[in-house]
Image (cartoon, rainbow, N blue to C red; front, side, top):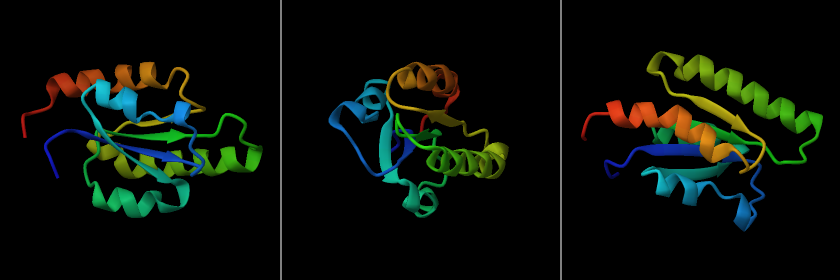
Amino acid sequence: MNAMPKVLVVDSGERAPDGALSVELAGMGYASVTTPFEAADDVLALIPSPAAVVLQMPRHADWAERRRFLDLARRLRKNLGESGTPVIITGGVSGAATMLQNQLSVRAVAAPDL
C-alpha cells in the first residue's frame, strides 16, 4: 500500500453519492476505505495503523442501529486507544469533514514521512 495515511470509514452499507466522505478525505490528503458495518473488523485487520476510524451512522438510524455503532465505537476506542487512533462518530456528512480536520490535522503535521 502507498504511504498516504488511510482512514477507515464504517457505514451501514447504504451509500448515497452525497453521503461519501472519500472526496473530503482525499482533499485533506487521506486515502479512505469505506466498508459496511459487518466487515469493519476484517477490513481493520488489513489496515493495521489507520490515521482514524470514522463511524458514519445513517442520518435516520433507529435506536438499535445507533446502539450497534456506539458499541463498535466503544470497542474500537478501547482496542485502538494505545495507538492514539481517533474513533469518530458522525450521523452523516454534515460536519464530518470539520470533525475529521480537527482530529487529523495535528496528526498529519506530526506524522513522519513514510
